[in-house]
Amino acid sequence: MKYVIVGNSAAAVGCINGIRKVDKEGEITVITYEKEGCYSKPMIADILVDLPEEKLIYKDKKFFEQKNVRVLLGTKVIKIDPEKREVVLDTGIAENYDKLLISTGAKPFVPPIKGSEKEGVFTFTELSKAKAAKEYITKNGVKDVVVIGSGFIGLEVAYFLRKKGINVYVIELLNKVLGKALDNRGSEIVEKIMRDIGINFFFEDTIEEILGNEKVESVKLKSGKIINAEMVIVAIGVRPNTELAQTAEIKVNRGIDTNLFMETSIPDIYAAGDCVENIDITDNTKKNLPLFPLAFEQGLVAGLNMAGKKMKYLGGLPLNSLKFLEEVPVLNAGIVEPPDSTYEVLVNDRFEKRGYYRKAIIKDNRLVGFVAIGEVDRVGILTGIIRQKLDVSTFKEKLIDIDFGLVHLPKNWREARIQQDKTGYNDWRPEE
Amino acid sequence: MEQKQQNKKRRNLYKVYPIEENCISCRYCEVACTMVHSESKDPIKAYKLEDLLPRPTVEVEGPVSISVMCRHCKHPFCLDACISGAIWQDKNGAVHLDEDVCVGCWSCVLVCPFGAVHPHLNKRHSLKCDLCEGRDFPACVEACPNRALVYDRER
Image (cartoon, rainbow over all chains, first blue to last red; front, side, top):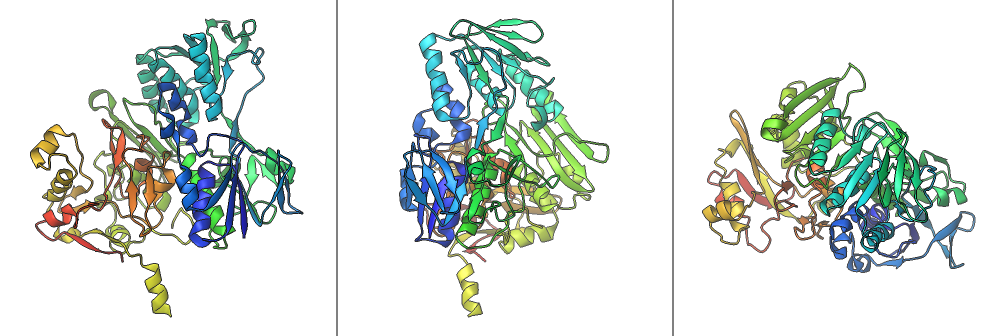
């Protein structure tokens, strides 16, 4: 059996693990246009605060050797030919496959902005671009940076730049940071922490034009304000990278469409990670959820199926950790702000006095989401309860306590998982 | 044949099982764990000077108490979520967390359904039960005065 994996990040590693659980012999080839090897995408902004590059490595050469995987770095796959069962590389060579995984990830969304072709405009989704941005800062002695967008990448970049003593101006179209990824109170807390270290925010505003000759010199906002800055970072969001899939006329919606086995509309071609559209278990709709753990899970399930072990992927739970904020950990999962009055909301806000905040969202006696700030030890238990759809009616007021634990759950739940080791699955999460 | 398949599914993995009926919430397991993972190997110094955290957690609610530690899951959520590659599974299935590789993103903390991976905020890495690697026998089990912890092959 010959497996080809396009892309070399979380989904690819998950896929390798999945294949090797079943098939120890088959030939696996990973092809990626990036040159840096298997680094951790969520960690690239850390290079701004001089994280050593070896720390960025997610899986080193040893991993690929042990798993007996051939890796082609700096090689772009330009076309898939499902008839001939081969992928065409930019070197002109074709690689044939029996099973193919597309894990081409996502690409940054850059809206048409006047002047965005000027030197000094960067995105932050690839290591090479992040490095280029860092180099630009050093080379040009950049002192002021405008960040467009206050999502995870935008805030992270803003935070790290500020830590390096650079003046940062964050422009956000909405009236809060992190948009729908965090609840209003959570956003308020994050914004306050970031303002306290000297980051400037401009809400309900957007960029109209990037000014300057060849290089960025200033930025004009829609409100008319002009901010002097030598650099602009566009971090509005990412879109699934489906270009390669489209060369084979694979069905694409808001991302590559897959069935429960992670197989695309063309047999023997699978897809996983930020490039796919998958089920969000909080509302059972299909959407693009570009999150690291989900990419890994999907890759693993794809790998198992590619190697012949049938396993369904039952959907992913959106979850986030604001990993850069040293002062205060911010974790959340599922629905963070109730969409209507049929949801019950429990809040334990002691942030001002005790430094923590917890919030639980409940619908029909099931926990559907939470936010935990400050004290985050053992919040995974809450994530578990969301996945298992446990009836929380008898202990729901405990959910927002910081000492909430397994001891508050039904005894038979504990017995099954702890005494009888029910920690495996027939189908891939969520379990019933 | 069926017996054979059953055996095949059972992993050759020894781990710590808490028995809540026997637990008297004395927290000796927590102290023992902290001590053996310290430099000084002294409980007072370990707690006062070394800024360490215990890997088992004794949870108490009224008359019920239980010491919870890593279950070394067959399908570990923490491993899927780890962005730095610090978490890995050995050939027996034990789940390891390499504290030097960990960057403290708390993804594992966010997903562990047992709450058994703990964030060390000051040191910016997570920590979890390592089955007392390098020691003959888990310290928590040894320290438990009421046989509320047993070291046993996975069921």
